[in-house]
Length: 90
Image (tube, rainbow, N blue to C red):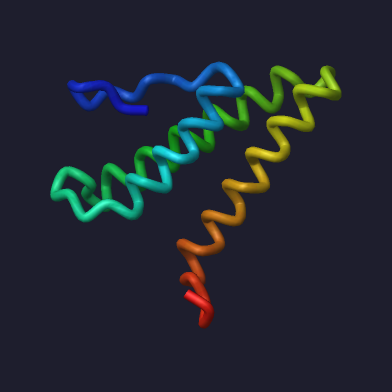
């Protein structure tokens, strides 16, 4: 997601998004001082923008569109946890 200099690396392939979601979750879970709230918010915003662009790019391809929709659903679930917390079972 971010390179060594802190620049965002745009996500382009399904694998980029699949792996990137795991990295995004790890970043938000991190206690590392480099994982500032600003960096977390920036990563989430960039991820969402790249996913929206990919979704639009593949809107006419039913198979790819379903794959990206599944990633978007996972992202929505992650964002819900960020907003509402993990719930009583956590």
